[in-house]
Image (tube, rainbow, N blue to C red; front, side):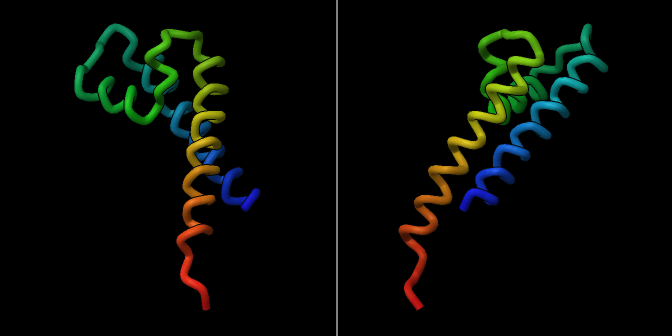
Amino acid sequence: MKRRITIWAGAGFLIACCWVLYAFATAPDYEIPMWTFARITCPAVLAGLYFYWVLLINVVTYAIVGLIVEALRRKWKPVR
């Protein structure tokens, strides 16, 4: 289970890194649909923090979501 939660946290880090790179590449151009998608996949963007805090908060957020999902997955897994 620890490995899966680490994968969830890694996914959160990669998603946040991609949004940071996108923000640096298109700083003056704010396309509304893209930033709406960014707010959904990277909730720390809503806080308006510095980029390194967004990375850390997104990793923690995805780790917590992964913990919940994996706990529910284990609970509802059919018995063999």
